[in-house]
Length: 111
Length: 118
Image (cartoon, rainbow over all chains, first blue to last red; front, side, top):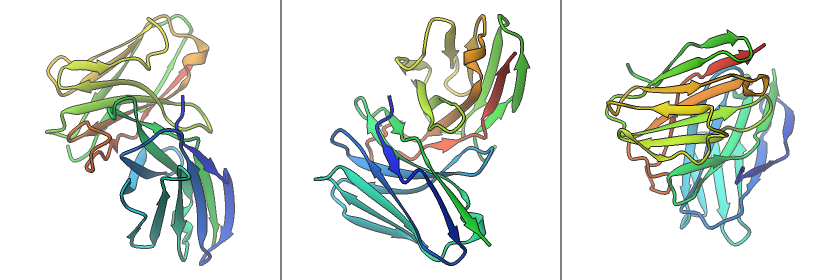
């Protein structure tokens, strides 16, 4: 079963705008990861935030983590057409030996 | 190679046939994962190897699915008596440590093998 659940599921924005998506999870975690998947391709790791961190930045990406609410958000600033992809959050599951992925959030950036 | 390599990239087969999907992980990565992804869904865990042994195969849907990693590197996912419901993209990933809970638990994915069962 999937641990994470992204919200909203689909997002269409203009180039240059910011895109925000959320993820909720159910159990206690050591870290939460975000991945990107371009159409027809494999997943690419974007960022990992530890359970003792509240916010983390990587380039145009900003991730927040609220362990009390069991939720995380991913913000992409100044979006580009190349950011068009599906974005998944993933959390360790069953003894931390694997990652459980959410259903994904499809982002379309219109040039 | 530099990344995770999966072959074939596409496989079309008939219902009832046997299929093998191969994964060549990043050199030195001890952990290897197989996931299955249906259209519009996130990856679904199938099996996890640490070295040569299957440390967690609880995600395999039934006994038609089997995976091996005999030398701790290349892995093969085997599907017997394929059914139309097996159609999906099968993703392989490798990890340096295999501990998803660790701070270096990033997974490196291959491009996937798209399986279509007619």
